[in-house]
Length: 214
Image 1: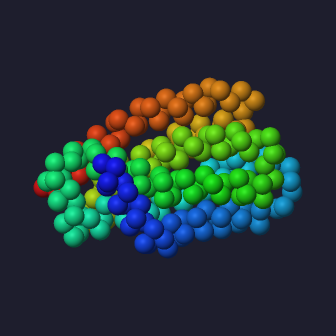
Image 2: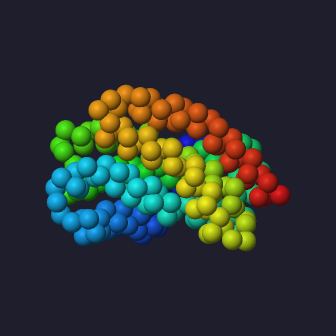
Image 3: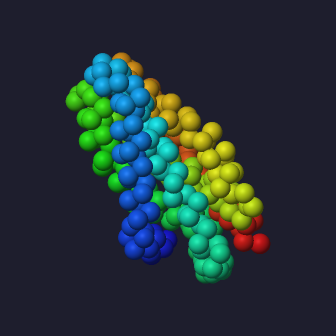
């Protein structure tokens, strides 16, 4: 499984334009909000955490349609499933590589974007703390949605319809943890959802991969 994760990371490095596109989308989408809402520091500071979270969620969606697509088309997915590696292991490796190449970079550039959006400096560590489990959840749930839509005729249409409802609770609790005067409850919910998704999402995605490969 570790070899597969490293292989996926190497492939992502070779196709760095995909990661760059997600990061560029994250930054550009975030910079559009001040133009629409005005540069007032009070207004921006009140919604900066929500803006950052929405942009991170949408940016994480961009690479999902390619997560299994190329392997499915060239037969690599069939070889992986026949190699003895369990299907849930393949799904977990894909989710891990997605987070390492997309979620982690988004986490690293979230602070500069939040500063630009006038988020108070004392709230930035809390924002990053919520994004750490939050981006992991986005990768796990996105991998599940990518596996479910694999091979579908209109996968590009189905992907956001399946993914966004799954990700809304993560968005709600992630933004609430930053803006609430008592963030502990929202952080606990994020942690609980991550602990539930770690085993369940790869198992469900693995089952979907086996169905798609048949």
